Each structure stands twice: as structure tokens, then as C-alpha cells.
Image (cartoon, rainbow, N blue to C red; front, side, top):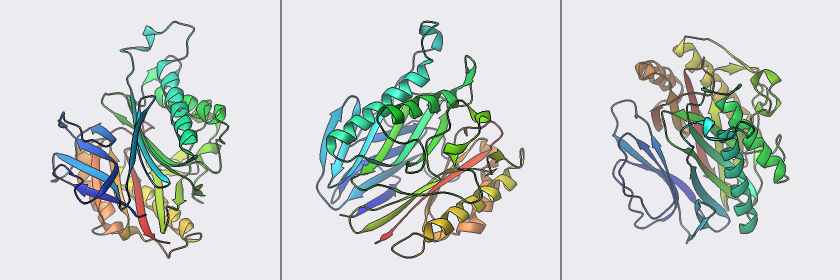
Length: 334
């Protein structure tokens, strides 16, 4: 089986391909939905590109589809793509004062459902997760919302008897202007080979300054569908050690983020089975806090990645001082 990510401006029809799932990015997304699982990201695409972009995971094998506890999923062989949206009430005050904050509860529920699905399908290994939520750096009671999300996610890992450090998936957590807690994921029968960044503290070892529970993700993950080697690089920003650097300077932050991407790729290549990954051979998605910074970010990245596929989306990063974040994905024969 071969897994491939395809980007199209016009709606992807799936003709001649077996679709696992997709992301739909842009403003004014069409109301109609395709038959397969799709994560809808209502946010401006930056640059001279299309108003709406379709990013679709396709395989060369047949698919099996289902709906389980609000998760729409498709499976091909030993690989599964799933997507779930959980809407929040208008305010956390809708819950009793003694209850856990809503976002914390929803993130724990979403991941608990996800793990039950993977166990039922016999595909227990989570490879890559895309998390999106409204107002990611806003306050809810005494904690920032991103930290509440981390509490819920981490609790679900523990309750599902999964570790919260070491062999954990690649992931991102990004803020949008509104909408539900939206989670999409890829999982499979084989475990990830986690990759860490020697320039950074592992996210799951962050000090308590960043919240009561550290984020649960690896800096990158190598995964192995049959005959392939995939590299998923998590959302990567201008962080050295565990500290944000270059506040207020989007060019310097972009350079630092790409230095981190390069370090992760070098580390992945120490373990890769199918040859060396290179920066220009990856696919990139970049999140930029301020639309006016797009040209500066793109200029810095072009120096490092050349004409590699690049999608820029206006969105919020999980720390207020961070102005951009970049994630990447590569594929090769194994």
C-alpha cells in the first residue's frame, strides 16, 4: 500500500484513487462535504494562492469506512485516518463551578474516543495528530486554554494506558478565530519511531512553567506503512531549549524555526531506512499570526527549502510571543 498527500485547488473528486481523508483550508469553505473524513480549517490562506485548498490523503488500496463516537474514519490496510469535531458551549461558565473547564473535558473525551477506536480496529499506534481550537492562548479561569487542552490530552493518554513521553506521536496544536475543538489523526499497526531535536528540550519534559501537564508529542516521528517511510515533523517554532527566542522579530523567528526543522531532519536521517530526507523534498504547512508578516516568513523559508510545496495559513501559535510555526512531512520508499 502507498500513502500519498495530494493538494488541489478545485474540489478533489477521488476518481481513480482510494481516499483516506482530507483537510479543507481557507475562508468561506463550501458547505457541501465529501464522502470521506475531512478536517475543515476556517482561516485565511496567505499569499497569491487559492481561496480554498484541498489536502487529501490517498492510497492505492481499498478503504473501509465508519462512524464511531463522533469520529468519521476510513481505513486502508493497516492505516487509518480519522477526524472529530467537538463544539464548546459559549462560555465555560455554562458548567458548574466545581466542574473541570470545558476544553479540558472535551480534549480528554476526544482522545479517549480516539484510543477506543484504535484499539477496536487493532491499530493501536497513533502516528500524527492535528489539533485546532479557538482562542488557544486565552484564559479560562486560572489557566491558559492551551494548558487546559494539554491536561485533557495527557489524562486520556494515561487512562488509556499509553505513555505520555518517549514513543508518542508527532502533533501540532494551533489556534483559530473560532469553531470547535477539531482533531484529525493518522494511525497504524506499527509503532512510531520518535525523533527528538538536540537543540530543544523534549516537549514532554517541559518544566512546570508551561503548565501542570507537559504537551504529549514528539518533535517528529518516522512511521512505516507497508513499503514506505514517512517523516512527520511536528509544529516547530522559534524555541531553543524550552524558551521562546527572538520576541517581536518574525524573520529571526523564521530562521530559528527552520534551524530546528533542519536539526530534526538530520536526527531523523540517523535512523531513516530509505535514504536521507532533505529540506527541499518535504511538504510544508506554515502558521503565521499576523498576515502582514507573510512575505517576510516566505522569503526566509524560500532560502532554506527552495520551491518545496508550501501552504501558509493565518492562525495563532500556542505561545503569545511566537509569531509563526512550521510543520513538514516527507515520504520515500522503504
